[in-house]
Length: 354
Image (cartoon, rainbow, N blue to C red; front, top):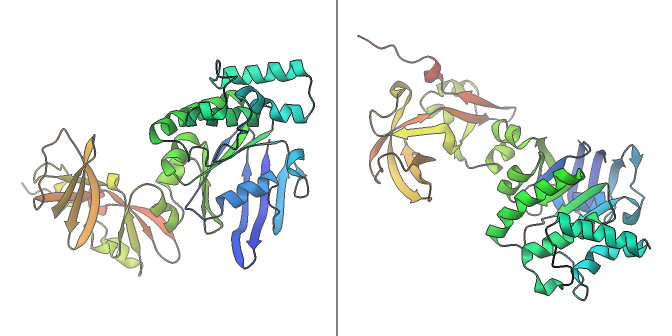
């Protein structure tokens, strides 16, 4: 299903939950609606499903405006955060529910349910009840039930929120593989950026009811279009006076320019470890945090605190130790624009005097 949304708004009394949101989704794509809690993600999802009516704007499925169509006529499958399974029904009957409502023949229902049981890895659990299943298995039942009537669009509202971390990671991979196999257009809501980056073909960042940016996870991470996106995706440190960082003095040309620096933009080392030492500045290690596969290092340069990572293969640093700090690039922004700036001294290093 191809989806087009034009100028979507939703107000609850004086509260403006969704503000002039417009986007398109190509058939078969898996889209992640990502943003902080209360940002408007679920309101957008519920309007697409027909569970809420827009205050203004148009929702278009395959060229047809569906604002006034009830949920059951929109060709949508919905997976809720809390599964919403019928406790008194078996796995088989939960999956078959929508097909029975449509009064399909028993043999057709059985064939469809058993194919979904096989597809979702639930074979052998058909006669169990929800309380006899793990959280991951319940979510698979909810997924199969949503797919049973063969919807054109699948909507998932924080589908992994009620599942523990280990199972959640496994289900992410499973969900992406299942949706690719079925080939259904899908939209899922999450506030977990790792989840969105790992699962989605494209991400839509929603903040305070507005669409901040839409693009592939890679594009959004590498080319954030707003200050909010740059600070929300990945880790970063806000720098009030970016022109004071060595190699970024040119930023002073634009008054009021500030910066965000990601950990991977920073290279640190003991004196003599960094190749481009002329572009580095001396800093001090403030704290170290062991992260299993690497060290997270908090450093201070000229009163500015930054965060980066250091391999376990390298010599361990100590708090209070002097280190060379090379900031390779930074995300800059002011009231008018935003852009990525490379360290100027890397491109134009100081001459070596022999």
